[in-house]
Length: 75
Length: 354
Ligand SMILES: [Zn+2]
Ligand SMILES: [Zn+2]
Ligand SMILES: [Zn+2]
Ligand SMILES: [Zn+2]
Image (cartoon, rainbow over the protein chains, first blue to last red):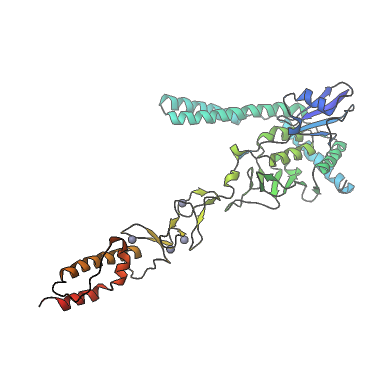
């Protein structure tokens, strides 16, 4: 099935991706951010809060945003 | 949704038009010429500094060059990302984004007259300092100028003497988004308004001590009135007389009352160099070089000692005068007990051999 996966960590890439049916939010996270800790990110499915066990549906829009994004002093 | 549909629709139509203008504006490709020229200039200066043996200048220029190179890389990434992905979102997408915003933030308002979409964050707490909630005010008509966003503290917690700072990364209501920049660009390029504001909120919730306008440890620092140094809350002193804030090295402790005093509120004795407060040593004589009360006492004691010695030499001639035993460590008391020098001079004269 196809999903829209948006990673706001760094570049804000938005990709249409193919995943296996029955994939959960946690499994998708582990696939896409193998070095990351889910607790360090806000994860939304179709702009709604979600849980790791949620089974993804075709056409879902999954957004991952880091909790910590460092600001600076000029810009 | 809590925004009424009519307002929301009119607002979203205006936002869609503004985003469309932004897309067409960006499609006029702007290569980072300015950055490239800066890099070339820095390289020339670096070579000149190297040839002349100016090592400090050379290393400074090298740091600047590396910074500019990093920015050049970012410029190129942004360019690459902007062009193929910038799309005008549909009204349906924007409507879903607005609903997403209402999920994330308690307050979302659209002001059609002011052309602003404003979301209010919860209270931002960084290392136990509560900066209160912030209003993230986005003026879609200002999108092409990159000046669309103001970040206004609703219950500001400002450092002493700084009206412009409300957060380690907010100066004059502008948030310096640092690492959030690319994500924000990408979110706007595809009209992902909820991601845009969520990224901003996460920047507000993060403290980057390496590049803060003011470090949190110095948020309540004050400037020493006498030397201009920054002093943290724990190290600051205030003048007991006028209340001025001071650093520890500028606070002079009066030897009598032991309270700290600023430069204006103290007097330094020319003889012993101790700094007295003006309450404990009021100016009485108007003589600039007047000694402090302690030096006066010590001087009187010394006079007394001399007088007593003289008196002792006179005892054979005047046995009726009582002698006073003198110890160095009770000079002060003796000076007080022995009365004024004038009296004793008088006594000496009375018993002097004729
Ligand atoms: Zn000072
Ligand atoms: Zn003072
Ligand atoms: Zn005093
Ligand atoms: Zn003195």
